[in-house]
Image (cartoon, rainbow, N blue to C red; front, side):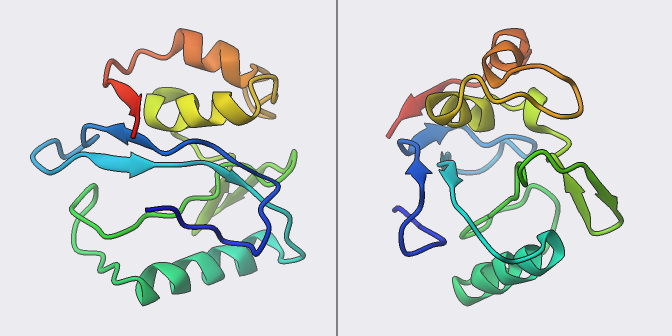
Length: 135
């Protein structure tokens, strides 16, 4: 399943299949990174994404639990945002191959504004051992 959040995303990675992360007693996940442009401010974008998740059947029961969809904001340009409901860049990027592999496909030279490392460097240093394969 491919979900695009804009009529014409700038870039979209392949779809990748990964074993569940966190709560491993569930089916594999499909992951994709999409780059898009928006006029929405970060918190307004988050509200829109949460609305899309709800419309697609997402019910939040427990952390890392089974879900129909999970849409995260990984980056918002070079912004660094630390708010109770929104942290950008996503604080777990460097720990998750299922995010880094598709992100590396799109923008390997993107520099994380917090760590100062490129996506490619974060992927090479990532300790996560879950296999990430093209779906």
